[in-house]
Structure formats: C-alpha cells, structure tokens
Image 1 (cartoon, rainbow, N blue to C red):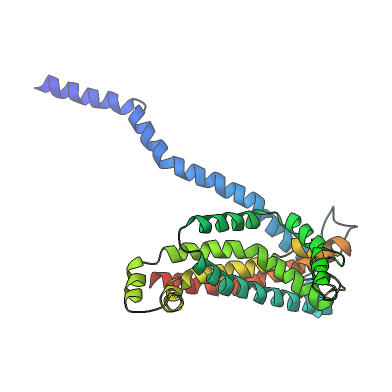
Image 2 (image 1 turned 120 degrees about the horizontal axis):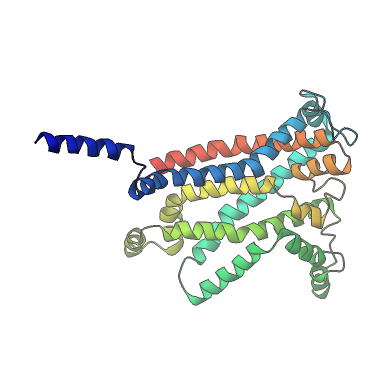
Length: 315
C-alpha cells in the first residue's frame, strides 16, 4: 500500500512538471484566439479611423498652412472655430446641408416606404425591379454624377426632351435654385434603393398573421400598411433616418462632379466648404475646423436617435 502511494505521489509530481498536453494547448488556443482576432481588427480600425480623426482634431486646434504643413503645428485654440462660425459662407453651407438633409429624409422615409410597400411581394417582376435598384445603388457616385451632369446640361437629353414637348430649356445646373434641387434629387435617386431594401426587409419581418387578420376584418392594403406595418417598422425607420442624416453630411461626390459648389455657393454644403477651405484656399486648419463641426453636428443628431431606437427595441 505504501509503495503504491509513493508511486502515485511520484507520478503526480512527474506529471505536474511535464509541459501541457495537446488537449490543454487546444483549450488555450480556443480561449485566446477570438481575442487575438479582435485585437487585429481593433488595430486596423485604429489605423484607418481613429488616427486620422485624431490628426483632424489636432489640425483643427492648430494654425497650419502650406508653409508649415511639414513641421511643428502652433497651437491656435478655438480661433479656427470662431473664424468658421463668423464666416457667412459657413452659415450658407449649413443651410444648403439642411435642405439636402430634409430632401433625403423625405425621399428615404416617405417614398422609400411607398416603394417598399409595392415591392414587398415576392414575384419575378419584384426581383427584376430590385435587381435594377441594386445596380443603381452600386453605381459609384462619380459615375452616376457624371451621367446626370450630361443629362441635365443645357444641351443634354432632358432639355432636348423638353424642347420636343414644347417647353423651353431649363438651366438645371446654372440656376441657383434649380442646381440645388438637381443635386438633391440625384442624391435622393442614388439613396432610394438602399432605403427601399432596408424598409422591405423590415416589412418582411412583420408577422403575416396580423396582416391576414386585418385583411379578413376588411382593411384595405394601404390601411394595413399605415396602421399595422408602419408602427412595426418604426425602429427600422429610425435607423434609416440616422443613416440618411449621416449620408447627407457626407454628400460630397455629387456636388463636386455636377456643380463644384456653384453657381456661386448655391450648392456648397458643409463637407464641400471644408474641402474648398483646405485644398482650394489652402486654409488647412480652417477646413479641419469646419469638418469637425460637421462631425459634431452629426453626432448631436445621431446619438439621440440611436438611443431612442435602442430603447424602443428593448421595450
């Protein structure tokens, strides 16, 4: 008995000193592997997002021009922000951005809901229309903006069609009012497919029992859509509204391609004004301050929406 105990103790001591076996190493890999992947993703995100944002903040609070871009940046405090807020062009850009945002919200939420209600049924024609909308949404803004610039020019296809119908040509891109409407409608046209797909996905998640019960009770289709489907897709519409606001503040490509902010400053929104300040006037710190103000405004609008949508989802 004592020899067996000694053998057991010795075996335990020897086993304790051995390196971990394959099973133990596999268990350690299973525990540490997800964190290793998350660490790599976090490092990549910091490299492509956090670091440029930190440099933007540093640039906005500094006095930087083409002469001292490479070198030390003198601290300027809030001077760049005061200059931007006192600039009449900045207030004009804010007004233009607000108009484009309202147009995009109406298009995405109202027109997107109507189109999604029409395309919610599963059929071959619906699949064909959705494929076309995906193609429109996938077009690069520079490509679609160039096409629309050609179509809306003074001798483009749209004015040619108006001439055939007996109407006089319109200065879609030269008139301050029409240029803003033209850029806004093209932006809405490019964003509508995404809004339709998002809202259609929300509608497909609505329980069919509710819709069938309402139909049996005699409710017509659009009454079902507005009284039953619409309240159930409100969280989806809230998220879509956040994305629409963010997209409107990122609207740079269509303005750059179609009007270059003109005529005058009629279509220059806040991102385009930041671009002009930084890369046309070479006021790098002023452009960074305007871009940072736009980012802060988006956060002020987006965070309450996100919190309210999350609260509704928990309820």
